[in-house]
Length: 63
Image (cartoon, rainbow, N blue to C red):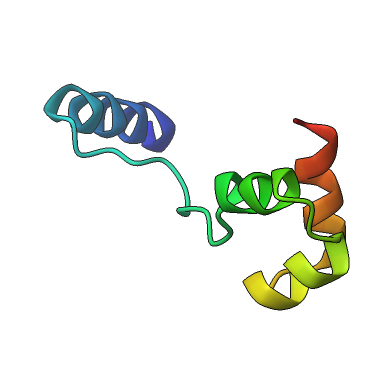
């Protein structure tokens, strides 16, 4: 019963355009890709953006 009511509420919110569905991203992947295309090293980008190097490498692989 609870799950049905929750699904109805989510559907209604989506219909109104107010359902976001999750936490907004903290890291700007497009910004990381832009810095990678300029030739900066992943370590420099991580320091500048305040993100882990692993995230920079993840953006690099998805380019």
